[in-house]
Image (cartoon, rainbow, N blue to C red; front, side):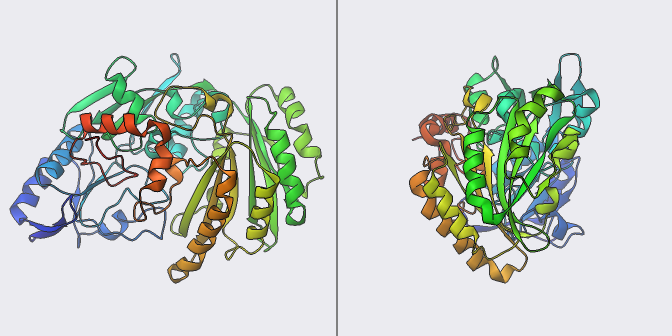
Length: 464
């Protein structure tokens, strides 16, 4: 291995001597991957094919000791550093250009305690893997909507998901985390150990350290009554109005989403998706209005394993496609906002793009964590997806124009996990993501990461 050109935390180019890199490599139990090494091209790829960054080094820890070594090396050499969990983040912040990626993808241990109804899972675990283990005991916790999503990024940002209306955010179900902070120290954060840090990691993103494992509270979850009722796009306004009215009065055991998309045959459709966890007869009663409205072109709602629901949207969001997203939190769905959505989606430039309402509210309105948007009732995702990198401009423009048109009907806040490429575009969306909690988070950042080592994220700058 020759001398290596890398990027510092300040964005400057510097050189690491061959011997320095070799010593670092020898200190690790897991692999250290450099440009030109076998596997480098694959190791730098993330779910969003629109992200094309080339790290200086990629460390793949096999345990906490490796994470401590990597954090210490980055700090001692003033390196730009990013942390990779599931690599599903839309903005691709888990991989940096020229710096050190701490890639947790080999940290996959999961241990379920069915008696205490808890689980401990390491930072490289994805929700599909997590659910596979917990469902062996008929247990689950709130965990996103796509099986390929990593538990780390989703939870640290708050964690919306199918079970959220009944059981709260993924972060609300955390009992403790193990993490390595910027000083290279291993810490446990919980309600009784470093409670300030525990508050911050539950919604503050990856700003406070490298979380090596998460301990969650689990809930009994058997087969769920779930799926979609699909309607023709010609009825989109009526469907979204029905969705608004139905979802505003729903039972806490029932989470509802609405999505506008393009069917495989090229026709635009709008669907209402549901997830009910509880006694089947009660679920059928609660969901009956969804099945009766329209009636739908297709009723796909049925009992299914929770793991099947968690992968239901995977095929529509495959890795390697080009993605860009913006989002709004809403307290209500106004008719004027529906008109704007209908108009813009009628001329969406890609059949792969979609508009997606996630129901917030319910149990997600409770909790004392850094997640700042407890009053929101919907999260509206504007997700552009296309295949050719050269077409990015028009798809990004469509998304931004729609987002801008919807601003008068939104809260002004945004879910931190839904911020697009704002790591390159400015700090306004970051402030909107952390909302009223930003100052407290900035003070916490000053305490645990005063040099802002963990900055390649939706960044909170240390308070001065």
